[in-house]
Amino acid sequence: MTTNAKPSTEDLDVSIMDLSPLAWVLDELRKSLDNAGKALKRFVREAEQAQGEELAALDASQLRQARQQLHQAAGALDMVGMTAPALILRTMESGVQRFIQSPALCTDESSDKIEMAGLALTAYLEDVMAGKPVSAVSLFPQYRDIQGLVGAGRAHPADLWMFEWRWLEPELPVTVGPTAYGDATRHSLDRLTLKLVRSADASAAQNLCDMCLGLAQTDTGVELKTFWKIAAGFFEALALRLLKVDVYAKRAILRILLQYANLARGMPHASDRLAQDLLFLCTQAVAARASDAPVLSAVRASYGLERFQPVDYEAPQFDRFAPALITQARKRIGSAKESWSSVTAGDLSRFKVVSDQFSLVTDSLVKLHPPSELLAQALTRVIEATAVSRQAPSPDLGLEVATALLYLEAAFDDLDPKDTQLTVRSNRLAQRLDSARAGQELAPDSWMEALYRHHNDKQTMESVVNELHSLLVHLETSLDSYFRTPENKNLLSDVPGQLERMRGVLAVLNLEQAALAVAHMRELVEQMLQTAITAQEARAAGTFDRLGNNLGALSFLIDMLNYQPALARKNFVYDAAKGELRARTTEIEPQT
Image (cartoon, rainbow, N blue to C red):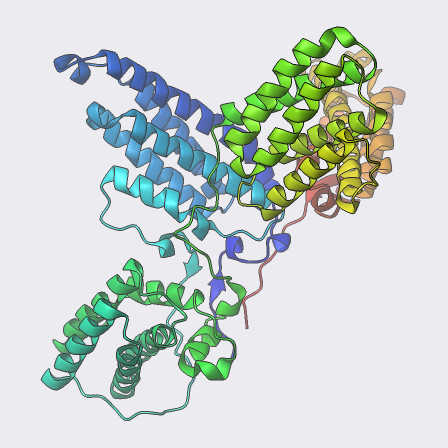
């Protein structure tokens, strides 16, 4: 069956999204959230020093600054089509507005909730940029906390499920007779609903499923027939225990009862919001075989719900630590790496420094990831044994410690405390450190070789991106100066060489389309240098515009190399007819 149901791009496979706009705004978003958090903390410190009437008279400029930062960030995400994250930012903005009206509400606890919501949001967007299969619904725990701050009457995970709602009647065989509206039906609904809400009774849920199908047989309009079939699918999911009877299911059950009462009194329409909430709950219920849940499966098929993965919306998926802790851990690891390298090279005067630095590293490790305590203990034993020996460690032991530090460096680049591999690999490194300390020879594990390659690739890419950024700055400076004073062609003298160096780097990175654009830019500049063409003629021919547009696209592309090099390679195309590099746009086809 072909439908017109069309999801937002956030809920589709992230590889088909055009992530260029998000890459463009992500850095500014981080800055806005960081500035908003700092402004809130400053106000909290000032409020703690104020008492009584002084609190009401406190200057709220810090709060207004935080509100403005959040407002701008929400607008940026709206602009790039990230609707659910933008909703969270607007909720955060409303929270700060409430602080402005009632300064006493801006406490350490409430400001922490806004800060943690911002960190979770940033982590989600970084996962999106990394191509991970994530859903905005996973941000619900933070969204719920902020809704509580603003005193909102509703906080539902479906709020973050950006699905374009339509009434699409599921096709399923008739298995029950019509159910008439009336007192007897209302009495049965009341009794079964109470039983289901109180004890999660599966038979009550199945009976409610049958009653909803009967009501769908009674109603003739597509809207009401669709509503009752979706409700029937929801109850079937509860009957088969594919859904928990949690607070959101219970509220949905009671709202269905209220909807029946309204329809029985002659209301001609069903609630769009309720129907969409029920449909969202149906995305969370997946039967092993479609035949096991025929009604639910028909609902899921009619709306193409198979493309949505169930999400544990109660568990924090993007619980992140304060940036200061991560930054501190990275600095400690960097210092420990440098000192350990000196010790392995024979600098015995560094033993005391090494002991202190590794103590800080293990402190950060246990604080940020408690299951890695075995690794922290193993590192401590190695450092203590080395200090006692007053000798440089053996090459094998030196390599094992260096590997552990490299691993921690990589782990803290993108720390996910719930990653089971983090604990497994930490424990394995602890075993290897103890073995190396005992003098045993060890072959590298396969994942360690991949870690070395990833580290080298990352360092290489960082170096290349830095070089490209530097070239781009020089190019922008030279061309901007020339655009301002086009009569001085000497300002262009270094540009062809700069463009050629950039073309060479892009070619090495297999960025062929970008390299073609830069080659064309060099031709344009050389033409202006070698011919008698005037600035007015170049401007009229669109040369200035093409150069400027290409610089903008190149800046875009270079930023994306830091996030998704593969996407950067395929997401930009050189239009030879226009002489311009541009980001591809992706059309999302309706699901069938």
